[in-house]
Amino acid sequence: MTNKVNWKKTFAALPLSAALLIPTASPAFADHHGDHEKMDKVTVSTPAADLRATLDHYLSEHAYLAVVTMQKGLEGGEDFEQAAAALQANTKDLSGAVGSVYGEEAGSQFEDLWSEHIGYFVDYVKATAEDDEEGRQTALDNLDDYRQDFSSFMESATGERLEASALAEGLQMHVDQLVGAFDSYEEGDFDEAYENLRMSIEHMYGVGKGLSTAITDQFPEKFENTTPATPAADLRADLNHLLSEHAALAVLAMQKGGDGAEDFEEAAEALSHNTEDLSAAISSVYGEEAGAQFEDMWSEHIGYFVDYVKATGNDDEQAKEEALKALDGYRQEFSKFLDTATEGKLMAENTAEGLQMHVKQLTGAFDNYVNGDYEMAYEQVREAYGHMYGVGEGLSGAIVEQNPDMFASDIPTEMPKTGMGGTSEDGGLNAWMVAFASMGMAVLAAFIGFRRKQDQA
Image (cartoon, rainbow, N blue to C red; front, side):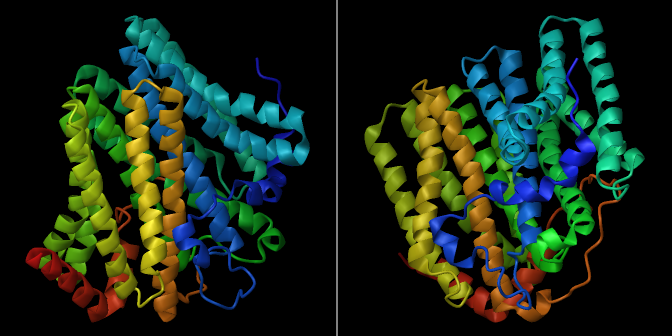
């Protein structure tokens, strides 16, 4: 049985460790990170918003890596141990923060507790592989007991700002989504499996919003009296969600394509749905034609990654180089587009540098996966995922800086009804609609001009 720590004391001081968890912004967007000195200025980068982004990052990554690890475990994949190690590293990113404040013993106890529910998911996978229905039920029973215990101490830790009953409901949703994604995958219903994967990732952003709001309300001075539930912070969270999910699904689709897996089409379709979430926002503001053009542009660079995967499978070095050259040309043009759209708030040169990092991370993760260096592959998977939080902060920061009046509200946005968060009703698109609408004709002109230039090339 896991030794228990004084969780009320531990979580009460959790904000002290928040700074250690803040992901570093990418070089492309460094100019927009961490301007906390002017609290009267509308910004996406406040202490509270940073805490929310940190929790969003590690909680959503936990869901993604858990699903991937469960898939690999069922298949007996050669990279199962490395996938599990990446999930464990995600856990260490949380427990290490506790240890840095309270010492190694407290950090170790936190890690034991967090690892406990992951262990029950592993038990469920093993029992499934062995056709052990009793073992599967035991794992589910253990998860049910765990969510009740975890909800109770979180209610106490937050001074009842998060209610145990609502927390238990949110945790049940988390369990249902991960188990559902796994069961559907095992049964060959890959459409359902990837739908549950996307839902499990999105769900964690509600968790991050709920938990960060409770913590900052409980300890306002530690976060300079800022709140994580503002229109600007919501925009940052929505962009973080869609951009990091893009990286995660791109890596997974590339792996599936390289393996010739029977679920490749469904993995690619999940990536396509992520693209549609961005394109739908454009359509809602500018109409179907503009939305279709945006979708074509965004899909273009995904197509080059697909070309790279196909060339690798065919041992065609020339085709691989052509795909990389196409990606290089794309990042240069897309960077200029963003520079124009944000009226210079995102400089093309810096954005191109960030996009090059994105390309290297995805192709690097794929190359190492194909070559059997799974440890390096998953290290780059995590780097690619985390990188997008710097991108999200930078892009949302530019949008807010460009249109401060539209994000100036001090009134917190609505809290998730389940305490720890559920699937958002708006699909994460409302902030995109507001943001792109606020850009007005400057963005539309830049966008259409960019497409015409491509068509004429």
